[in-house]
Amino acid sequence: MKLGIMVRNMGPASTPALIAQCARYAEDIGLDDVWVCDHLAIPPDDAEGSGGRYLDPLATLAYLAGITSRIELGVTVLIVPYRPPLPTAKWVATVQELSGGRLLLGVGVGWMAPEFKALGVNRARRGALTDETLDFLNQCFAQDEVTLNAQRFLFKPRPAKPPILIGGSGAHCVERVVRHGDGWMPMTSEPEKLRAPIAELTRRMQAAGKAAPAVIPLGGLPLGDRVAARERVQAFAEVGATAFVHGGRYTMFDEFKAMADQLALVR
Image 1 (cartoon, helix red, strand yellow):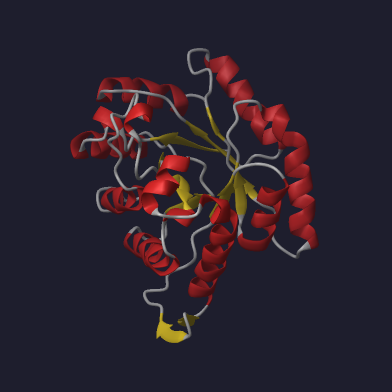
Image 2 (cartoon, one colour):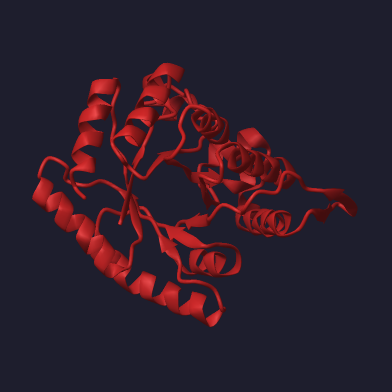
């Protein structure tokens, strides 16, 4: 099973030098992927841990694409209704093109009301906006010529479509994966909670004539106990997960290195 790690694109650890050092090290020790997250407008009273400093996730992945060569590059998750469809599709295609096809596109509907307010986006329409953008994104990767707002245009470059991994839970999430996605990104550190949802999602994907879904949970492993961590990863694989992303806090490279080294030993 593939193992990935979060690289902090927020707070004091989000300097260009440290982000680059962490991503390169994860690649050097054989981890499968590195991931960043998405926030655009953190209110002052909710800025603990980040100070409100967040780098744009797709810009960060474009930066990492230029300084790595093998490791896959993911966002968990890009809040789709924050951004208009066409610029989003262009960013996604550009990162996929420049990285040589290494993008893993986790997407979500979002939840933080102050961010929607700052962006002038109707939070009540976040599900509908997400579906509209994902439908458009899939069209862009399916054909060179697309139409938006009654205007035909060429969508190039058009590299291979990155896997679209839907974040969230519940019936709406399952439906979104089946209609628009290639997999699911739940947030949990407990494998057994995924057994029934993965079985149901797999059944729905097969009924729709689609491939079995990738399932990539984001959570934490007990890295201080290698045996327990390995057993946890094996339990995730047993219920149907195809990969796991470990998220942990750090402020300096030595802390990231220790965490990444422990994760690499879980295999």
